[in-house]
Picture 1: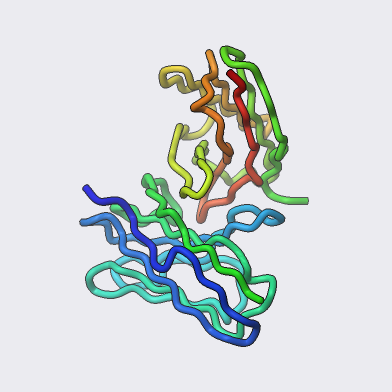
Picture 2: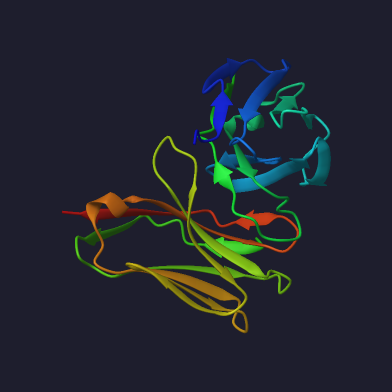
Length: 116
Length: 108
């Protein structure tokens, strides 16, 4: 079974631009969660989507948004990029929702975003 | 104060040593406790999962949760160079909260 895939793996943008990251979950998984990983803050939860609906959202500004398609693939968008948005963005898939309960999550390799 | 505290290390041990990794937390609502391992340029992978207090053993790995002390631990016995990675504790009740991660190096 193929794992979670994320594209692109590396991205360089400048301040003020916007960016879209993509995540394809494991086949059959309908839950996709997004995380931001930085050296200073560690891994922080952004949001979770299940069956095209956002189930939960972390404490990030509205510049961070996401969506999920009918095939469970998910995209994350960051508008008006700031230097502090430089991070590794990880997505994780699960067969069932993870918010409020436990279902094993499988992480992708991440997209390394650098904002100049 | 962060909800989940984890010493970032780095921690360096000789091959065969017993490794002890720990996290403390402040939110008593956490019910699910996990340990992840993350190799360089890879996403985290689940090592151990525990619900509520207690111990769980899987091969060379033992996870302990003490909810009364708000303290969780991961022990690695007979550590190997292939165990060199960053270890992240995580816990959840509504969404996941991660520790900062401890970078472990096991020297041959």
